[in-house]
Image (cartoon, rainbow, N blue to C red):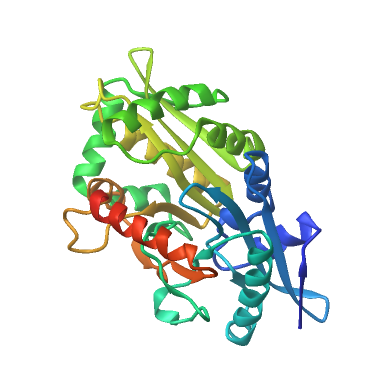
Length: 332
């Protein structure tokens, strides 16, 4: 068993796509997105007799709160028999690289179902989540459009029909600026920490059109909602959304999601991933509003292993104190 730097994008993505879950954040292209915005990707692969059995893509983040290494929905390992001692070996290699790069900690948000109870050696619970840990997804395998529509909450079906009746139309757009304008409005309204315009532009340019679709909802000849959907490894992920406050009473976002689900069925995808929702019984959670929206389409919950940190220097504890305060202020 050896761990080495990866240098073959095709082999990397071929391995990732072959897994039961294929998080696009671990794709080779996503690493190139981060490289273009000034954050270095680190790619390690685990090989057993020349065969790839695991991958881990990490990003060096030069954040003001502390330079660190982040691992988004990784590492991805093919077989449970590799998921013990080899996780330790991967983590040790990441630690060596992170220290050389001047990082004060490693933040790992693995895409591992919580019930697997896998552990990351030397890790402690992160004060903040890096990515969604309560995933709401719709299993499309063997289902028809009619079955999925009937499986929705009655209110959701009615709002889809109402949007159609009121003249909302959905189209695919090559113009990322439409999304950026709506996203700026959404950010001002909800006061969250946004991705930069450069990030959106780079992600869209690197993945579209094969692996990324921008949907725009139009009402009375005006774009009033938009969303970015990723398509990778047989999964469609609802990654970013934005809408106009002026037309908030028009249920355009419901029709927009339905169109994306219909297209996923046409592509033959097996999973439609709505991404994050709030934990159960967390009514004051910042995701509580979108939880009602997402769960109305039907589906099921996948709870992931919580985000973990591996401290590498004393500077980490200053970052941890800052993030604990920020977590409290944001309602998480």
